[in-house]
Each structure stands twice: as structure tokens, then as C-alpha cells.
Length: 188
Image 1 (cartoon, helix red, strand yellow):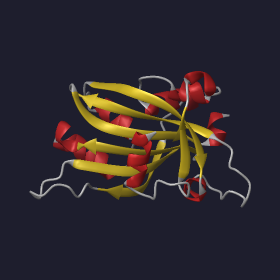
Image 2 (cartoon, helix red, strand yellow):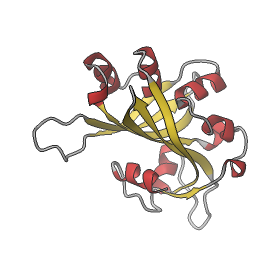
Image 3 (tube, helix red, strand yellow):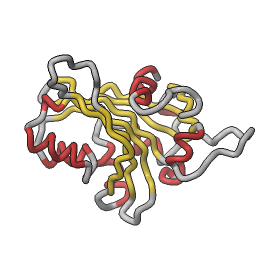
Image 4 (cartoon, rainbow, N blue to C red):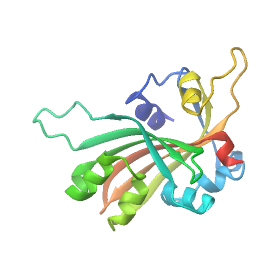
């Protein structure tokens, strides 16, 4: 859960105005959300298999870590929405990647924000390993609910959806941190 909050902090207040997160076991995640989230593949691959076609990408915001003091900053982060082939919102995500572990053409493709990160890494033929997957119950607050296309009714708790945090190693080096949340109707 702490990993999810750290990633949210890149773009929003990680408190209940964004969402509340609870770590869950795989048995607590209903289908088809469990199949979409509980694996060590790219979410792009799982979602493309579920929808039978490539997904669209909408970048909501971008950020760079401000910690580099030498003017060189290999870290890049973005808040994204993935869209089904019909244009419906199917996934919310935050990705933080150390671009020092990819070549310049791959880094440029990632920064361009035209296709999902998983597809960029696959197309680049990078040796990648998804690991440290933890499943989450997510109760959207007003900010996440607005990204999902609606606002919660005051005084009525939002229905949960599910997500995961994971890491990806590129060429054996930890390089990517992810928060991925299935949009409620997408898991139906």
C-alpha cells in the first residue's frame, strides 16, 4: 500500500481525496479483475487479450523527479488512462521509469505518450521482468472518481475497484514502478 501512496504523491495528495487503498489477497479480488491483475505480465498484454485489440493511451500528467542536482535526470513519470478499442476508459495508472535503462529511441517513444508503456518495452525487445506484484482494493475518492468519469455522491461510499502495484526490471536492473487500477465497468 505504501508503494501506491508514493506513486500517487507524484501527482496528487495521496489521501482519501484521491482514493483509499487496502492490500488484499488474490481470493478477495473478484473475476475478471483477478485475471486482469494477478499475474507477472504487462498489464498492456492482459488488457489487450481481454479486449482483443491494442489499447489507446491518454496521458493525464507528466512529472520528473526533482532530486537530480547535476542537470541529468533519468526519471520520468506519468499518470495515464488506457482506452479500449471503442474508446471506453478501462484502466488508470501511474508509471515511474528510470530512462537510463532504455536506449534513446525507446525513451523518446515513452515520452511521446502515444502507446502504452508495456507495448513500447515489448516493441523495443527489452528483457523485462514484472515482479513484486501486490493486489489492492481501491475506493476512489473525488479525484480518481472524476478521472473515471464521475463524482461520488456525497455521503455514499464509493464502490471498490481493484488494482495492483508492481515493479519491472529491465535487463536485470530495477527500472519501473507501477500503480494500475482497473476501471470498475472494465472489469465487468
